[in-house]
Image 1 (tube, chains in turn red, blue):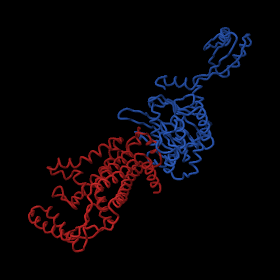
Image 2 (spheres, rainbow over the protein chains, first blue to last red):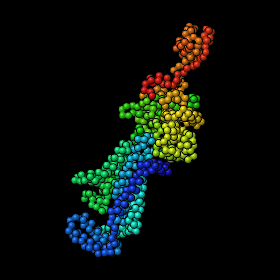
Image 3 (cartoon, helix red, strand yellow):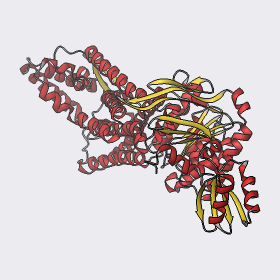
Length: 318
Length: 313
């Protein structure tokens, strides 16, 4: 197995020695910095609010009334219940709500866009790693070693996933630092309130952020695998990158267009957003978390098998 | 090459009825031959004859439709790892990672086979004479330097079978001579089997012990270089004072037809033993002889003859 570790080392060397990868990391850092600056400059100076308990009590009363009016909508009722419970918890435990942006809310708000960016980068990395060796001809010297093609492909795939994790760590650390510099490191001690089954708990922000990252990674994971399949099948990195990014970007439109059909639930993109089961409402009422996980698993296995067959069985003519 | 020793040895590379079809088109048709340790085997053929396809099947880049290939007794099909452990190769151009340095490229390949330490990498770098520029990125290398780096990666793991596709491409005369000497050492001292394909036929003549000629996917024959060249017949060229008279003498006295007559020279296609007889006869007949050279056909002449002279680059 030390041999396989060496393959991972090789793929990592090829990923990080490329200028394109360095540019990606710079773009990621630049985006976080820019977001921090824009928010900081547009945010009015926070006013000292000593009356926050009274205003929360007011807010809760208002929400109670509104909740009574929207009885029909389960989603809205849930939202009000959660807000009211959280507010009550703050009043009871003397936890003043944050004014404007804080360190942690910045880290949280940077996550969705950055996750999309990282998905694009990971698609580029996996496509280049698999297909570009056919363009440059290096594939010939790579595959004449006493190593199975399966191992070579697996090392490329795993190295890409490691690259994505590395990007997430960079995102976390850097957005934490920028958040601290822009909005004060005092916010680091802030508690994260989560609402689970009608009760409010104080939890760690770090856990909440990483849970958030991991949920965004479902789409990343599936699209990287898809890009790997296209790259293996067509041996063309441009096609793999273009098609995968296009599908990822168009996924919400595709789901909207197909929304009327009952079979939409079997479409990959209807199942990549697992937050529909935690905070939102499922796309269709007959969809459950285990249903989505099953659909994802089936797609995953199909992608992997087809990509693997193409990579390992076809002649190298490059 | 001692054919007796050869017969006792096991082949380093053995092709058994290898056939390759692309769709319904047969690209390689029932190819069988053997290559032994200690020899340089030249693989010759016009463009599109199937040289590269054959080499790709030997190193496992392409599957064969029928037949099997054994490297040191291991089947490329069923014992890929054991078979390829024995092989170092350059397939077509030595394409390396241009964004890495020469040294990083070698580390990359060294990691893929256990047992190659830093010392061995340095040794190979020294051998191919790249020491001074090994830490530069490959994109700044000349074709000759890339060729040498390609050779370095093929030699890293001390393979017992070395396959070089067009190895002299881009090398300067000194580099070609060094390569030739090095291949000579590898085969004679370490018993490595070397397979070379090249379009530079004169180079092949100097480099190879045996050659196999392939055309349209079929093997026309495997012979030693000397046999191959001499099969075209030996000729002797005599420089004389009067070509016409000399030709008349050999015709009248020995009944030998002259191949070509020049004012001061004649060329005869005769057996080796007949040469002194001819010279004696001419001397007796008062023909002055200033020189006698045996003219063998060059590999290129023979090659063109055998393959019909078409489609050669």
